[in-house]
Amino acid sequence: MNRFPRLAVSLLLLVAAASVAHAAAPAGHRFITQGKGKLVVVAADGRFERELKWGGIHDIHVLRDDDGTPRSVLLQQGPAKVAEVDLASGEIVWSYDSATQNGNAGRKVEVHAFQPLADGKLMIAESGAARIIEIDRAGKLLHEVKLKVEHPHPHTDTRLVRKLASGNYLVCHEGDGAVREYSPAGDVVWEYRVPLFDRDPQGGHGPEAWGNKCFAAVRLPSGNTLLSTGNGHGALEVTPAGEIVWQLKQDDLPNIRLAWVTTLEVLPSGNYVLGNCHAGPGQPVLVEIEPKTKRVVWQYPGFDQLGNAVSNSQLLDAGKTLR
Image 1: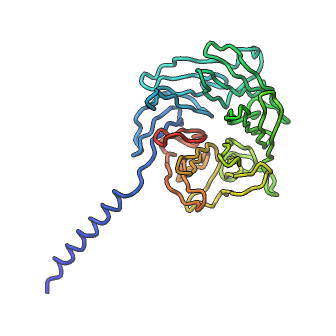
Image 2: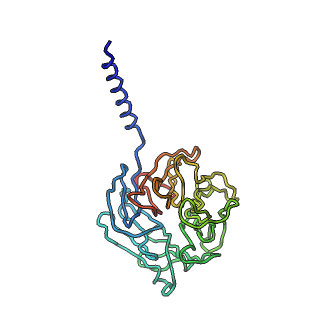
């Protein structure tokens, strides 16, 4: 009996099944990020749609037209300037320099966080000056909040800062290892000290480091706070009373080793996207997980294309997210 026809049919069925499985696999995300001296828009298939020469960043915000189309991006330019860049032309259409404006001349200032507000206004967190300001597009100072910093330094006073719907400000104090919520008057109304979990701090940036240098904090609809622990290699969800109700540790994800966990983005699905900075070759720079099961839904292995210092990103295809 000739078995080759049956074998050929079996192989064809396997190929067809594999093709169907491949077609059913979830697509990647389209997003914007920075690495290796360039700002890039990455397509869902991983190719670069757009590249622009640009230095390192810590924060990024995409501004959209009324129909939701990305129009421009806000990001830092150098240590203390916030710039708006037109995505179509690559031109800088607006900028503000925290090193020289509104009382900061002669002062060492760095900017690691900012946020577009209503009516074209902008919030900027100024490390070194230890304050949050709100300005209009003409650079006029509209509001100022003084920050309480225990270990002042222009590079570590703050990482990401967000103005909440309540009008309060949620501030990651990297150097203090704490997240503090401030009222508009500057009062600390909530604080969470990121734990070291009975370990001694260990210097460095990669997976071998250890600390509590929190990078991002997101206020969830439940009232809990989701935060990334920076060189603590993970993320925590804590209640208003400071109870840890969810934790992601360094080696919780199969075949992934977390390093300096930076960006947090909560998708409409409830999934989390985390930035995995300084993780080294073979490790993803972005990871999407289903938090309850810690199942990895998507990852972007961009080390070769973007290097080892991809610190922030924003998804362009996920609708309205929390970040």
